Length: 201
Ligand code: MLT
Image 1 (cartoon, protein in one colour):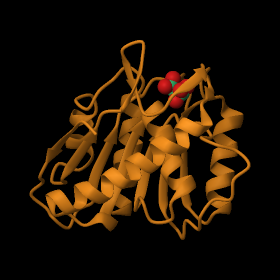
Image 2 (tube, rainbow, N blue to C red):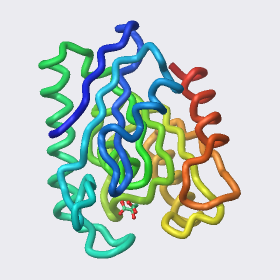
Image 3 (cartoon, rainbow, N blue to C red):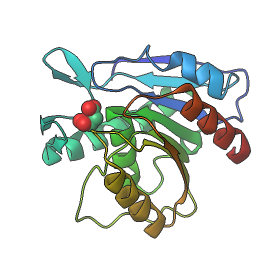
C-alpha cells in the first residue's frame, strides 16, 4: 500500500498508524501525529480504493452503506500490510496504535472487529459501526478513544453509542468524547485525544 514511514526518536513509544478520511491521503494526518506523539515512529497509509479519484480504505455502495465484501478484503489487506511493514522497517508489530478519521476510523474499527491483535489501541475520530452481526474478537482492555459529534450527520450519535457498546462488550477500554458539532475534527477533540494518548501510553 502507498505510505509514508517516518522513524521516531523513541523506539519504545507506540508506532502511530495514520488513516485518512475519504478524499484525503497519507500526508493529511502527519501534523496530528507530531502533536499526539512527537517522538513516535509514524506509518501513514493511503487507502487503496478510489471513489471518483478520492482515496478510501474500502468501497461503499452509497453514503453510509458499506460494501461488506470489499470491507472484509481491504481490512485483511491492511492487516497483512502492517505485518509486512513491521518486518521491513523493523518495528514491534504489537506496538501499533491507529489514529483514524472518518473512513480511516472505520477501517481501524474494522481491524478491531476482525483481528485480535492487530492494534494495541486506537484513536477513532467520527467512526461508524463497520459491520454488524459478527462476533468480535476478545479486545482485552485494548484502549480506544472515540471522538464524536452530537450533530454529526454521517455518524449519528445512536451509531456512536452502538459502536461504543460493541467494543466494550468485547472487553475494550473505551473513552468516549462528545463534541457539540458535526463530522469535523476540531482542536478541542484533538486536545482530548492527546490527553487520552498521554495518559494511556
Ligand atoms: C465512510 O464511508 O467510511 C463514512 O461514510 C465516512 C466517510 O464519509 O468517509
